Amino acid sequence: MSRTVQIETEDFPAIVYRVMGNEASDKVVVLVHGFPDDGNAWIAAGEQLAKDFLVLIPDITGSGASELKNEAVSIEELSRSVAAILDNRQIPAAVLAGHSMGGYVLLALAANNPGKFKGLSLVHSSAYADTEEKKETRRKSIALIRKGGKEAFVKQMVPGLFSEWSKINRPEVIEREIQRGLQLKEESMISFYNAMINRPDRTEVLANAVFPVQWIAGMQDNAVPYRVSLTQAALSDVSFVSVYDNCGHMSMAEKTGSLVADLKEFIIYCYNQ
Image 1 (cartoon, one colour):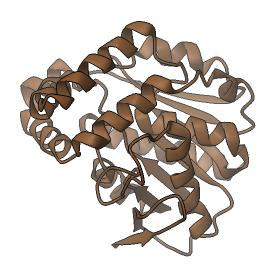
Image 2 (cartoon, one colour):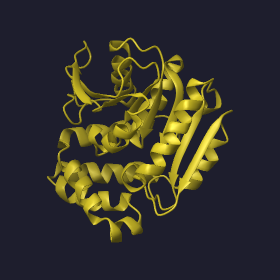
Image 3 (spheres, rainbow, N blue to C red):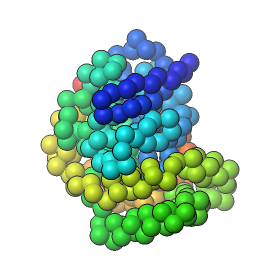
């Protein structure tokens, strides 16, 4: 069973999130999507996790049905929208999982509100700031989008998030992701890319973490190479690491079963501490 909830705060005109599973459960997991997605990216995994946990899946502010108050948004502001969901439901702490940009959002939340975490799962994400090369690539993409090239950008970017195996054997999954990316507004794309460019290094969050940290990586991930994840995993006192073969940057679509199994193991561990 799933339902959609919308809340409003002084800072956010509309925050929309999905509720799945037993709403009386004290074991809560929040699944935060990446770019250029919305909460639908997590639905397949969320439905399976909802058999055992209360699952909350937000549309990050500016994506899906959630609205941006202004275009000059920061990763820190986006993290406060996730905190607003927990506060709305009176959940003091949960296991939070973030894919790619969603992981950046959760690292910002952990930097400012570590007490909200039972555990942090970073799914194809990184605590490092963008390199200058990456920043310049994002700026070029922003320029393309501003010139009306959103469709060309999405159709070029999204296939690169998947492994060669997926491109050959599951082209329909990639096409579905392209169509979802095309739903994201141009202004949100630009806002999110600027927010990612300006985000700081968050490795101190890992070094100081008083909660377990999980790393999900793909052997064929070109956006966040698995070796980058392995290097950062050593920073935390308690780290869970999973690396999937025939998987790029999109394990929610490419390796759903493996991802769900690893998330379930991690969530149970976090709540048994």
